[in-house]
Amino acid sequence: MEISRETKAAVRPALWGAVAGAIALAIVGFSWGGWVTGGAAETLARNSAATAVVAALTPICVEKFQQAADASENLVAMKKTTYAWDQSKFVEKGGWATMPGSTEPNSAVAKACAESLGSKKAVELRG
Image (cartoon, rainbow, N blue to C red; front, side, top):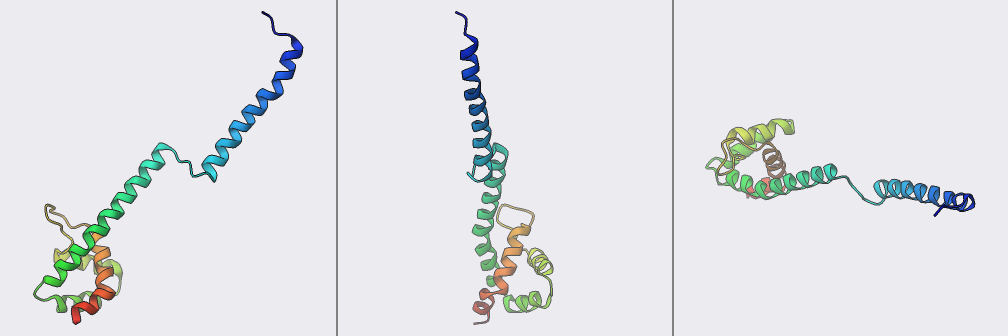
């Protein structure tokens, strides 16, 4: 069965429209529709998991800091450091950001712990 020239000519615009529609759909979907590639989804999941771990471990770090015998002096010494990086290093060196089962301190936990201790937690320590 042979397809006539007129039929081919009539179908060609519909095929080009379908191709253009598919391209437009992909552009809109990835730009504004929230579609992501597998690699981007994996990166988002990894970042979300790391954030959740830090959020879960920060209160443990704060508690370890508060339970130290010289917690008030440590807080004063930590606050003497001007930069947040130095404060997180202070927490790391004190061992409060080293979680059970780990041999190394977690720098993200140390940073969050120092920030937490520098805000409302500091008032609780003094009280």
